[in-house]
Each structure stands twice: as C-alpha cells, then as structure tokens.
Image (cartoon, rainbow over all chains, first blue to last red; front, side):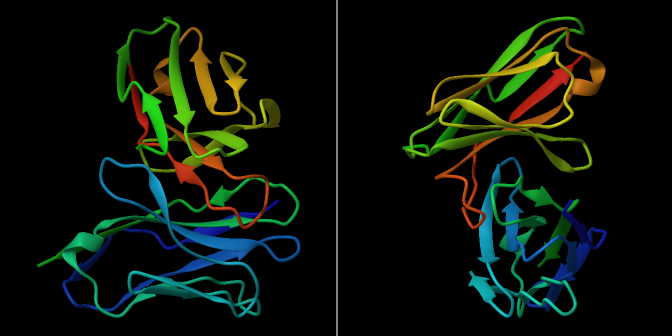
Length: 112
Length: 114
C-alpha cells in the first residue's frame, strides 16, 4: 500500500526565512499528492495538490512540485510569516478509489 | 454556513461509557469519512461511506460503529470507551471517490476518556 514519510518537526524559523518541509512517498502507480495544513484548534484544510508528475501545486506563497524520479513532493515557501505556524501534512491517494494516506505531520513554528 | 460540522466539540467521559459523535455536511458531497488523530498528531482513517454505504473499514475495534442515516450525515458511536480512545476525531467529506478530490474536514471532536 501507499505510504508517506515527512521530516520530523518541529521546524523553527524566524519570520521571512525560507521554508522547506520534505515529503517522500511510496506507491503503486502514480498517486495524487496533497499538502494539508492544520492551524491550532482547527481541522485540516487543503493547502495545495498535484495530480501528475512535474505538476506544481501552489497556494498562499507555498509551492510543491511532484517529482516522480525522486518520489518527492517537498513543500517550500520563500518567506514565512508568524501566521504560517501550523502543522503541515503531506498525503497521497492512488487512482481508483483508495484511502488518503497521511504523513505524520510536521509542526512549523515561526517567531517574529 | 459551516461546510462540515461536528458535535460535540469536546467530550469528557468515564471509561466504560457509550458515546456518540455527530457529523453533518452541507456541501452535497457523496462520500464521508471518520479519522482519528492521536496525541502525536498522527492521523489515520477509520471509516468511509459513499451514499450511505460503507466502503472503507480499517482495522478498528468493533466497539466503534459508524451510522449514515443519509448521505449528509455520518455519526460515530463508541461502546465501552477505553483510555486509548482519547483522541481528536475528525469527520471529512469529498464530492465523490475521485483520487484528486479535496477532503473537507470538520473542526474535530476532542474525546477524553478518564
């Protein structure tokens, strides 16, 4: 079955620093890939997604590129803000109805 | 106009009790889910229903019984609660069963078993 591996957190950055959160996946075939974000006390919400190789998902200054050759979907942002502090989840889902498989989540803490 | 709502938001109860958590979505989606998030934030699917029919049932103790009276509602009933059931439970929905479908999550129900 599918699996998703994320870097351990927490990731602690100062405002305006560059962010990378690594995510790699294993799957049969070519899954769709997602980043979800969970702000304190809230449910998860979709941040961005990519459905095929070389696709780039982007939203709110965050980007991630679907790299088939390295089975990766790393999340990046050029300049983080305090309001980006949250837990970020990488997830994958295979074609044909399959469950969404989440990574363990990476907590991001941004200080002023 | 909440998209996916859950009640209650907090639930504190004693071991051995039976409790229910309710979920409703007003998005017109066909598919709904229950997830469990443990204290380390690990999120795992428990059940999924499509048009009131069970389609995913992960390895969950049979003390947990989902019920879908209609496609807008998916409730979770838990019998004989145990300490290890303490977690945050999230309901979610998707338009269908497409692999690219975005999941819309509810705000979560924090269950504490004493």
